[in-house]
Length: 303
Image (cartoon, rainbow, N blue to C red):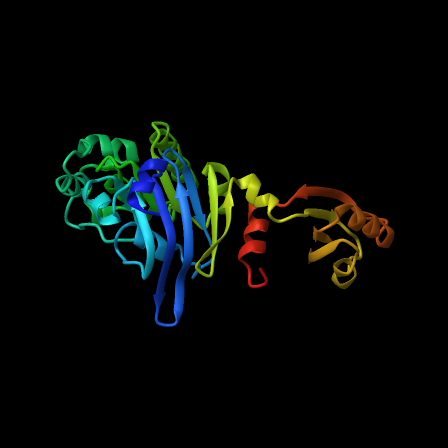
């Protein structure tokens, strides 16, 4: 897709036929992706799926072997220079001898129309740390400062790599509250995470990658629907895994003591067979597969 096409379609991110290899390894193998302005998109996949390489090409840090990337109709490096895109890496050194405010101010000075430093600190939830030296920050506080660094250019697209690593539960909630406020004005967010519950709760859309390719793309409900079946859970006295794994309609079985979890292609047939084999089974629950189940099914070795 050309930049002109991206402008016409109004895409925040337009990726077409993207390929990148390192020796014999195909890190990204033909990725096509369109992200509209205002979308919050979760990029998921196991280690080695190609997520980081794709993000690096979006940020202009790596050149693709083939294909194109456009950010609001601009080439990645031009978008970064213009402050259109902001990035929050999972790790990265901060200036240890500088205060939080000085560090954010230094990055603000690199942009043409940045946010006031105080505003960036407030939005990132670190205004109370403005005068603290970066060497005295906890891991979670450093992540929030990196968030302020990404925000200070006032970008239209924010790219986050594992943004809540090292944050405690309360800090994580505050972070996502800040993100909701940020996106309420129509801003676009792409975030990579290993916390599937974050993708399930905060993303408008989920993109699953495996072996350098997109294997699923849609809302959480649509990705779940890509993997048919249900989960049957029960307490089964005297259970034997070899027996429940072989029941009709069962694709997979896990047992822990008397607790049984069955992944079913036909939960009705599985339940009837379970009760026939183990009439004392109780506390039975049947539920649709969650995002984690879909993730494992679509990105696992047997996918």
